[in-house]
Length: 138
Image (tube, rainbow, N blue to C red):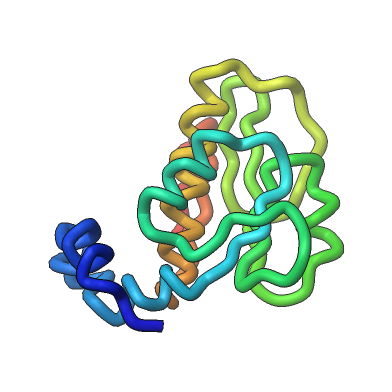
């Protein structure tokens, strides 16, 4: 998929970044992410970054589960799970049950999840985050 001149102007700052570039921005524009769970901030970030589509059902290049973990467990292919459990923010790993998150933890989760989803769609190595234990892995 090629970018229109309007898209190229809109995403100039991203295109100038070495990890993205023109080819990466085209890859994002062609990608579909299935987003499971209520995550309006995450959806907004991904859409504004130029992602082709954020959907709630159907085929996708990446399944992003910020809900109950069911979409993660049943998905085939590339998938990402995240949760804010109390004041703990987890991204990557396996789904676990937890408490209802506070607003700050949920906002952090959605922001990190959007960035990680875009990063993975660009073909970069996945990250995993756990902000309570301080054990980020790259």
